[in-house]
Length: 139
Image (cartoon, one colour):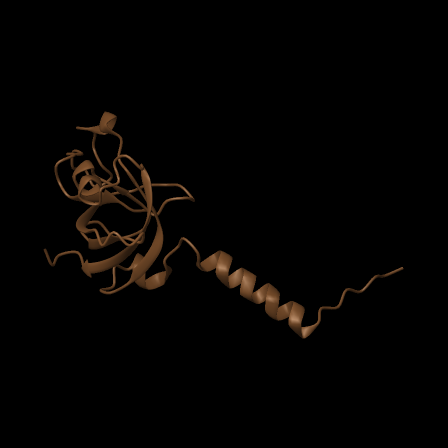
């Protein structure tokens, strides 16, 4: 006995939309991964632990908490990104990507200096929007 499942057009459309949202969330798209000027991504920002001061980052530099640097899962190293808080504080900071971070709940890890400028040290994690403002090699 064979059972055949059929999907209505509405069911297929709903499934397609869910897949697009799931696959599109968190990855930032091809423009972001390529470091294309103006590419944007929304998500949560955290800051790098003070215990990592002096440790090597993914691009070989040593982590310095007073520099405006950040870790991102896929942006090219040396990309400059404007980070804007999305809670109506109007705070922004521009950082250079020099490390990688992992995690499904965050999109960027900021240096202590960048986190201080965004006034997020006490909160630990805030909603932000990233926008690429300079591609690698255009420092």
